[in-house]
Image (tube, rainbow, N blue to C red):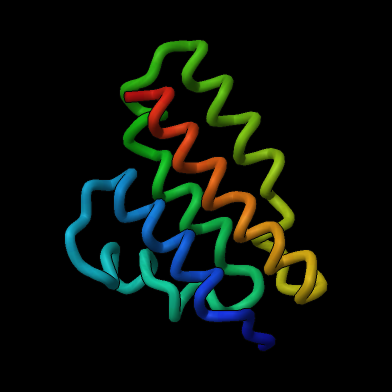
Length: 105
């Protein structure tokens, strides 16, 4: 299984921890962690976990935003995604996750 740049994974970990209000690394049995995200195909799980509380408590409009966000990054769950595409997608998803969470709060 291919690995990506750890600093890129850290960006998504940080955004997911903020979304879930987690203080430490490795939340959700190690899923909210850059070491987990480094492996191609795992970032989508982190995205789903990060937005789940907002989806549960969200309005119809909030749920539509979350669905659109997840649909855009569904490919980050595919282990066959090229390394370059996965890396850039993780970086973009981290930035967009931060913005989405700010909108939903």
